[in-house]
Image 1: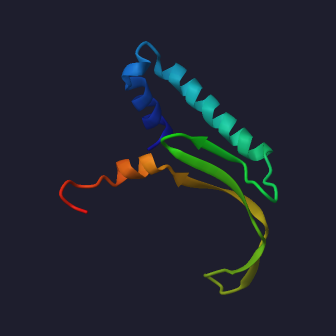
Image 2: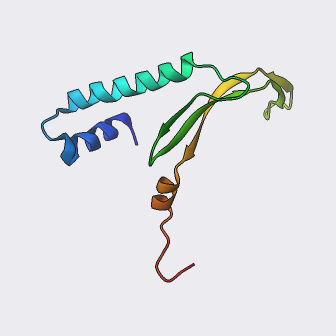
Length: 107
C-alpha cells in the first residue's frame, strides 16, 4: 500500500466524513513524523528497548544490532558490518487472528 492509497482509504472511511484528502494527508504525515522522531530520539537500555504498542495491531521495537562480519556475495570479500539500530514489528494476536482465520469444522 502506498501513502496515497492509505490516504484514500482513510478519507473514504465512514468515521472520516467531512475531512478532505489534504487534511488526512497532513494527519498521516504528522503521525509518521512523530513515530520517526520517537524512534530516533529514544535509546535502548540494558534492560528495555523503546517500543510503541498499538492495541489490536502490534508492537514496534527499536533494537540495537551489534557489529558483525559479513560477506559481499558478489565479490566474496569479507566486510565489517558496524553496529546499528533497526525496528522490529510483532503483530498482536488479534491481527494474527484476522490474517489467519480458523475455518469452521477444521482444527
